[in-house]
Amino acid sequence: MKALQYRAVGAAPEVVTVADPEPGPGEVLLKVTAAGVCHSDIAVMSWPAEQLPFPLPLTLGHEGVGTVAALGDGVTGFAVGDAVAVYGPWGCGSCHMCAQGKENYCLRAAELGIRPPGLGAPGAIAEHMIVDSPRHLVPLGGLDPVQAVPLTDAGLTPYHSIKMSLPKLLPGTTAVVIGTGGLGHVAIQLLRAMTAVRVVALDVTQEKLDLARAVGAHEAVLSDAAAAAAVRELTGGQGAEVVLDFVGAQPTVTSAGAMVAVEGDVTIVGLGGGALPVGFGAVPYEARVCSPYWGTRAELVEVLDLARAGAVEVHVEKYGMDDAPEAYERLHAGKINGRAVILPNG
Image 1 (cartoon, rainbow, N blue to C red):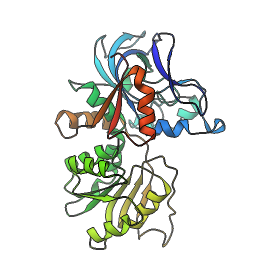
Image 2: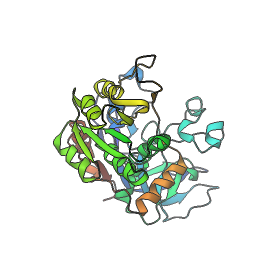
Image 3: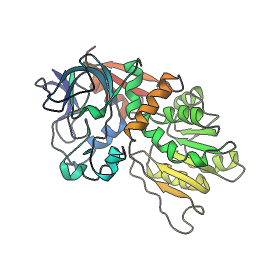
């Protein structure tokens, strides 16, 4: 079968032919309908060899949907032909966190060598993929696979981040979304669907600010050195109750800390390598700074429910399997407006 692999440190991903996978006991084989392209992959492919936590080559793609092609011994709950989404942050299933449904925070994943598809395990940008357990599958329930696949990360991650701050997202408050690309433009829609806050979007290009307005942002501000002052002006000097940074680079993280309100939340989602000092006087009083990871399986179910209700729609660019390397080139160059989706089987 064809697969898109990251084969050598520093090299561009390439489409190769690999052996067809077969499901072992407890595993599920999917025929991949659609797979998402994520900036996290760009971050991983920028790591030096000593920082890479898994061997190469690696089949990319941690966002995947497909149809069940075969069931390993002992698998129940699904049948061949079922349309499903893959829950990506795999865990052991039995530790304290996993018992709460928080496999994204599994306490034993590193110890047991459990890694997400596309981020250690073979991923979804392939004609077929293996899912290690049926508990990591969620029925699509009639959703369009192309629209649904980005929701497994680009929807789930901002949804999880927003849920953490819901007590502060009250009518009359302000939420700032820094970076209105793949995750950010979904976050804007989720904020509008889940809250009554004013949403202020920040990005570096007019094209992405236009997208932000189109999906529901009340205000769109250029993300530059003056952005924090602009947000404070919009909020009467108080700052934003919640700042969601989907870039995570040092300039945006610094800006987030400068625009957050007293008792506000700064949530650093992007993998840009920035850090925000926390200490007396470093941020406003009782401002909380956190860096979450993905979301729970139950939250993925909730995100898909929101999509079925028409509350969120991902702006996608579609690519065939042979054009998958181009999708990564365009993503790296900042030319993807929304989310790139690969169709491995046409």
